Length: 234
Length: 281
Image (cartoon, rainbow over all chains, first blue to last red; front, side, top):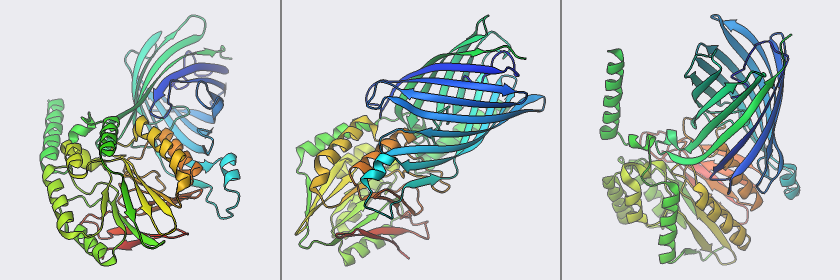
């Protein structure tokens, strides 16, 4: 979300986002801590970005996910429209890797931010898993889900030009997490722009299962604290 | 004025849905029986009763699986039970959404099974079983939603694990239990089949809700690590067949009367597992 609500100027050269996710869910066993570092470089209307997610405090520690993206920005109805592509790779367990290919369109109009796109998800056995199945030549190594709708609707409670803001959102994805279209994620957050080109932000995300089964059940929650630093535009 | 009209229309639609359909809209907001509570109650029932054990006087045998009959209507269910009585599989396992959750449907379903069916039947919890306080009726009729079935043949043993995914998640308690069962017991068995309701993958368009990806990673890993041979689900209403590693994930077509392609899954339990989807009509 930090990268979406771009602060200060649309045409800056470089921005660095660092944040930490702290949360718990039915799978994590205990509290998880995920530091994230994301760098973005803009040139005119083009931007490229690279984000890395690390996992601390559980059985697996280290780099857990990568997001590499590029985007092009234009105007639609006098409001910025961004067309982006991204590649995500994650290693959630010793046995399974996940690759995702994302096409995403973002349109910001007044207090609203709309996003819509598609991701293709590949569940893939890891090298470790394959080494355990080495005697099977006809092994099925992956399952591909070609079509998954990505959506987000975000509303800023205060005018976008203000120094601070609060937003609420319903969506099914985040920078490293893309849920199925039938598993929406409610989220809310606030940010504050300091005088020194730094934005401080905090967010809370709620995960639940079974909404489209008409049988909701809590699944997990995580909070996010971070900052965005941005160089002056040229 | 327009806003009031929309609110009234929504309220009327929800009211109509709640009284005229087999859907309980309160489940959009809250659940009176969250999955961890249901799991604990299932474990209490299991502790107070003998474990499920089936015996087979041969090493090869057949199992039947079906899902999504959505009682009221019973024609396909009765046809299926007739086939089971003729074919005599060792057991018939339902992978959820066999009824609406209403007490009257539970009574009808149990009555039909008692009158018509001649083979052992096992049940798993689907989201529809939980509507209209359905978990209370499920417990009363079937006892437990999470359990294992040990099948003893002349030369080997097979394991069936039945899970409760009616809420779209197993919950942390059930996930721990599943992990322990696989770690401690899997190597004692020839084959292992997991049965639950909510389909895992969305390899083609689907409006049904799968477990969250973070839970899928964990389950896929457990099944790969412990060499689970087969995972049978329902929920999607259309036949699905996906394979990852040595695990085949299967979902038969819905058994509901309105489905012209209603089918069940027949599994041949022998040294090499075999399976086929068989249409009723």
